[in-house]
Image: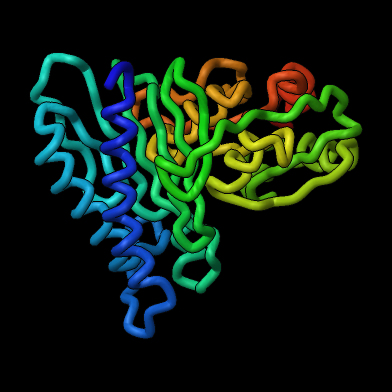
Length: 272
């Protein structure tokens, strides 16, 4: 194998293991849910998935670093600056309520830049994956993958616009700008979490924006969107994300053709 093919193959193997655990616990009557210090929920499926991924990476990539949402940072012992970033279940609130829109997110970073990513949504029967310079794909598994591409929509009036919760944009001081975008675009929906970005990468919608994300929320999404031909930056227009886990990331993802217009319209925060 060349390039990142072996890493993508391993990411699929990690996803297979994660899917086996998460699907067995989805809608389980004895699912255990606790509140973390930031008051977000965590289920026994989240922690079990991350433990399994950590064990497999320790076996197959012992020198690589690892950051997981539930168990934190494990520094790299190898010299290459490689680090895996894992969100065991993105969309835990959906998961615990029985909504099938959730996924395991697996990313590989080199020197703090995402170079490969995989999103596995077993309740939807679909995965998306990409590696730098190797294109983006979607399908039920590695063997069944087909290339994906962002849309060619050029005018905001024809665009399908996706956003996260309006309360987050209100807290960021940009609610008015987001509401105006909703009025000015052809269609607006809040699909939430990973799903809006994957629909963007497939060309089903044209813009996805979020005001605040952790590294594990975003790292796997960037290679998929960009290798599908899209653009992924923060609200200032800088490539996202950085590798500093203490810094929250914002996200503006688009088909590229609409990106400058979206950034200009989101503008600066307003005081309320």
